[in-house]
Amino acid sequence: MKILFLIPYPLGESPSQRFRFEQYFDAIRARGATFETQSFWDLETWKILYKPGSGLQKSIGLLRGYGRRLKMIFLASNYDHIFIHRECAPLGPPIFEWLLAKVLHKKIIYDFDDSIWLPDAPSGGLVNLLKWHRKVKAICRWSHTVSCGNAYLADYARQFNNRVVVNPTTIDTEALHNPVLYKTLPHPEEVVIGWTGTHSTLKYLDPLLPVLQTVEQKYGSRIRFLVIANKPPTLPLQRLQFVPWQKETEIEDLLRLDIGIMPLTDDLWAKGKCGFKALQYMALGIPAVVSPVGVNAEMVDASVGYTAATATEWEKALEALLDDDTLRHRLGKKGRQKVVDQYSVSSNTSTFLSLFEK
Image 1 (cartoon, helix red, strand yellow):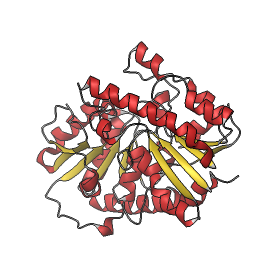
Image 2 (cartoon, helix red, strand yellow):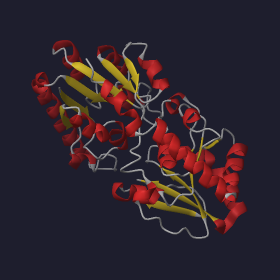
Image 3 (cartoon, helix red, strand yellow):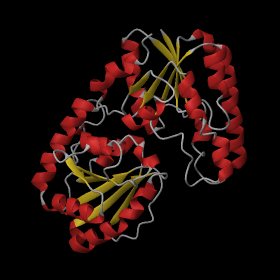
């Protein structure tokens, strides 16, 4: 069996790719299959893609991406399965997907982990039109199998295809998110409340600001807020520390946390989230406090952490964990075990490989 992975970003650069399929490459090889990958964006363009300016270089990178996809069409007959993560191209209708499915009759495994059929709220009308969000349902129809990150996404896909697999975003709890592999630095006399994410999800911290200010006012120098991201936050907090996200130090930076938070707004886009932040915290033995939106409510219960829907609930949850290190350790230990049992690479390998069954 030979598989072609058509992906948006260069290998090793996107969390969505790393934790949805890249970490299963060894399992594919062990099954006796071979695979190749082709990213739309090359590394040169990826490094500037979300930075301001460089419009000409980005446009050239866009054209190079379309050129690679066009070349791929002529080589697609060499593969048994075509795995498409999110889309073949970022703009326009699903021409490449149509050619693969309807002209070349290839078996497409279509994978997504967000509510990508919805327009982007911050973007203008022209951007949303160019992104052609309605292509998602068409690609679902044309696919041999649809791989979705949670039940909410799967329910959407089942409107158009009856071969849908819930394939959760998973954690490598043995070789990566494993605290015993890292030297634990001694914590100062502070309890660290932390969040990790990207520029696109920093907005979810804003509604929580009054709660964080209240907690800061009450605990003062006994706490610290740590944000790990690719862009500094603008939160007006006295005890705030920003750490630029780096893949090389990702786990060590997360291990600075005593409490991990994942606030979300209760909307259709957030319902499609796959709870990855919570999984990262829990896998490292860090108790999590999350908004009970979408899959978060399944992942985090009273045995492993807290869900909080209101400001009062957030304050109570954070204070309970701040005041009791024994509680933090107990919930953290149980949370890690839950990830190992239900959301780890080892527990999900058979589900992932089933995507390629004929």
